[in-house]
Image (cartoon, rainbow, N blue to C red; front, side, top):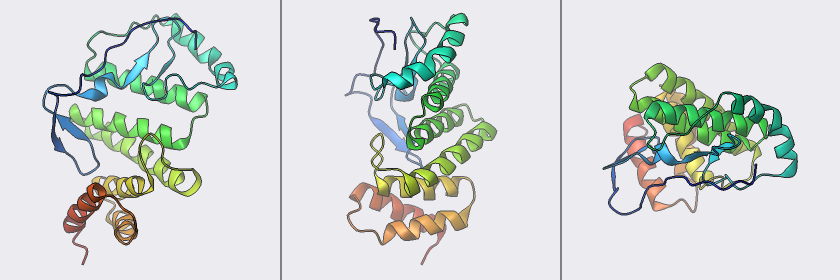
Amino acid sequence: MCKKDFTSKTIRIGKNQPRDIDDDLYTHYALVNPLLYNVITCPHCCYTSLSKTFDKLLPKQKEWLKHILFTLQKQNLTPSEHPTIEEAIHKYKLALLIAMTKKSKIGEQSYLALHIAWLYRELQDSQNEQHFLKKALDGFIETLENETLPILGFDEHTVMYLLSAISYKLSDMETSKKYLSTLLVASGISPRIKNRALDLKTKLKIN
């Protein structure tokens, strides 16, 4: 946004191996939670975004962001070298606010909402977790119907699986079964998603 240089930390791939994966694909790691570092804030202008999309700004989006970034700069936000979960949630919410302001795809906004829900899960804050899971669910439904996939690595089958898994998390079994049944008869589904879908099918007790 401001074209000034700065550095940010990331997770070194290797020792930080996945330990467990929840139904909605939230991955627990052995050493460090990568979610704490997946959103970057510029210390100069406060522009905040996923690392994957940080350098993808159109001129018109910069115009839309000027006012909100001016407001954030007055708050004197200073990114932590080693963020806590609470700080990461704040950064993700900033990234979501900025994504909405720059009119990013609903899929990107839903991706951010899902990650916020995952971070609240780490805090065992079920009320906020469910709030953001619902936001992610509604957004991914719109994404599947109206946007071109993949978005941020989520292809059509992954989004369909997430809709089923998130609905399951929200105790909406009918919606969960609806998307899972459609997914299970889809062609070209990856073995990873297929296996997870079959596991979820068992939990939903679908014949």
